[in-house]
Amino acid sequence: MTILLSMGTRPEIIKMAPVYLELKKRGAKPLLLHTGQHSDMADSLYNLFGMVPDFQIDLKRDIVPTKDGEATPSDLAELSSVLLCECSKILSKVNPSVVLVHGDTSSALMMTMAAYYHKVKIAHIEAGLRSFDEHHPFPEEKNRVLIGRLAHWHFAPTTRAANNLRSEGISDETIFVVGNTIVPAAIMGAELLEKQRKKMPESVPDLIGKLDKQMKGKRMVLVTSHRRENHQDGLKSVAKAVLELLQTQPDTLVVWPLHPNPKVMKIVQDEIGTLEGELAERLYLTKPLSYPTLLWILKNSWVVLTDSGGIQEEAVSLNTPVLVLRKTTERPEVIEVGAGMLVGTDSKRILSAMEKLHKNPKEYEAMRNVANPFGDEHVATRICDHLLEALEGKTAKKSTNPREASNG
Image 1 (spheres, rainbow, N blue to C red):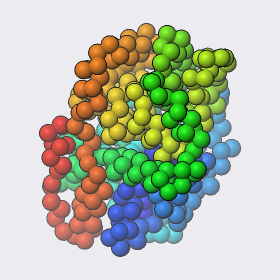
Image 2 (cartoon, rainbow, N blue to C red):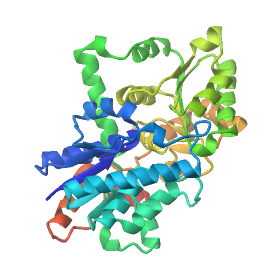
Image 3 (spheres, one colour):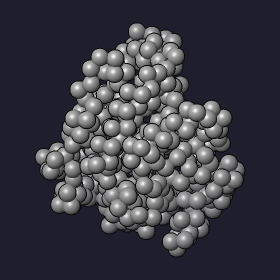
């Protein structure tokens, strides 16, 4: 029995790690394909979780030309065609019993299509999320839907996600509510950093040490924004909100790890990258952070402003209130349980939400202390139970995480 896990972006690597490690723990000897999107960030993540790719796609950036740092339809088509061909080559070499893909990336969709062409079974982790807006997020919303049409097993993070699949005609026998793998990944990442800090304090990143000293008596705010739909006025508006926050709230620190997309970096730098004096001392525009460092900042932040799907989940897992910088979210559970608010990118709305939380400590604490709708640390165990039973021809039990069911 050969199991191939396909991953390439930072979120995929993080969220697939618990499943890969659980399979190894059970002696399954999984194979790992790195699809190449975030190669500059991937090595540290693979090292963190003790994973070594067995195969790697050399996704040369010159095959994906961009205009002002933003992918065009032709760019996405070229990227997809290259990924499809390269994934097909790997499948020809490996001939696995099953391929595991995650989420909604173009590489996940292309691996799914390649596996279908090779008549290889497909397991989709984090299946069933829907925003019900085909252009938000783009192209991820449709990527996830299309994967759902081809996958043989669907590992849904919540009851709501499972119900989305059922409403689309997916057989109930192939759907399993297991929770979200971000929960064990975040717990694992935070624990690894704490062990590192205790054993080798000098190895802790300088940023953590600096923030740890400076944040005494201050509120730290983490900002991340990279969605294509926010690349224009949305990013500018978020940056203006950050500027006003720094100007009006002297007890606030802002950490904004900039996405490597050159368009994103230019917009943010143009808006707030030239601050001086005391304001500049409370603003950290950084390169993408290592996962443990990001988790430390997220865990110690007063609130996070983000348009990232994964960080919405990580924020809930680490009890940090989240303001979602989008019109809609395919993770509505965050909003429904009260752990976050949809604020979009309008600067006035962002600042109003933050002021409301500042003036209402009880409401803020309520956001921090919700039951996690994405499950517990045993998500990977459930996935492997169902997957291995199915591959061995057994009838998988339709068990769910009780917390998932109650919050779905």
